[in-house]
Length: 502
Ligand code: AHR
Image (cartoon, rainbow, N blue to C red; front, side):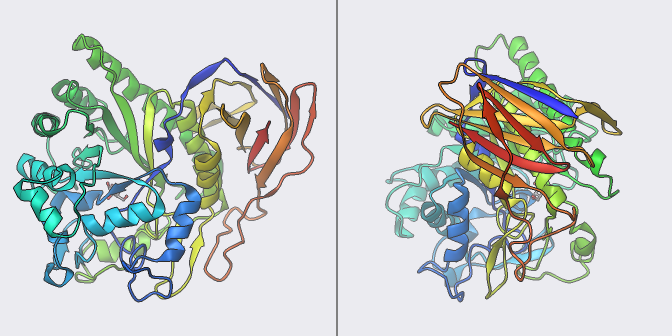
């Protein structure tokens, strides 16, 4: 079987916003407590933050982290997380049926972001609360001083404002599970008024309004149209979420789901253009895909706790998906889709970062390690910055229940104009066959392979654990060759790889 890819230096999709490789941390399960924060841990810094986790997050070069939720934010009182730690209340978290000691709040999170070198993306509660709390929180976070909330921040030890630019106007407000769920009109009005008030404080903020929680919601895509009709001129992004699962154990169909993702983005992009035309607006709204990942491995084991049968535990193990090799391929495919759609998807956040459906796992009082999906995320985040190339890909295809004509070879290409490198991210979806693939490079000075890494495994269900953290890892690729500007590589069945050319 053969496939071909043509890349031309001048044939581009878009400059990629680095924030395409963002992530997310929610007060959920062990993401915060025993995830990033564990004061008694051997590696804890002076703030109680785990250094071993900080190092792994730094390795990923995460550009932005969304916080504090998720469903959690829709009943969160941000004021509970400020002031002396011993005075902070323990609250019941209605979204996840747990309790939260509030030992980590905005100050601790901001300091942690400084330690890992990332930007904050904050969400306001538009579920149980509204405009007033949102404007107070914004004043606390971003105003230099001389007002009630900014002076309180200064009294709490932070003289300089945090200067957070990115703000989410609530979370998944279309979902009946959301605390304070609203209709599209109710939410659209509230989001509009909240955005207006926040812009009155600072017109340069980047505001994100909630789109659909997934493309199977009964209100999709009417929700996007209605919400944007209320908010188009006040917001910069519409947020989308999507989680992937393979409960049926059907690999071919599972790996075709990124075609659904592509359709979802295309549809919402069309809705944005429709509302833009209706408003006679020059302004462009983009997509913030601020929750995406594989999420299904832990669903059965979480049922009892989420149904409230285990009381209100603090930081229990929840949503702890243990990712396998098959998920490496899925995460690679999702990231390739975002790169190819980087003209409309400007921000994306893998959900989440530590312990909760995450690339990084920790044991309380123990080690931190990389899950299998750490690697495709790492490769995209570190080598996927620059200009997305508009590749001409010719690959044999297959039909699956979720989509027809799914190409076996899925490729994204990024030109790092500073480093003068081109990186190809390639997945072979074929269950049994290798595919000989030629990458023709046109308009580039040279074509020499200087980095080639491959992920394959004899067992699709293979995972990394604390005891065996290197079971699923990339290996140096072999056998690739270059002749006259054409790179030839054999893509093994069910494989992920990066080929870097200079
Ligand atoms: O990331 C886990 C949860 O998934 C988030 O809290 C929610 O927004 C989504 O449904």
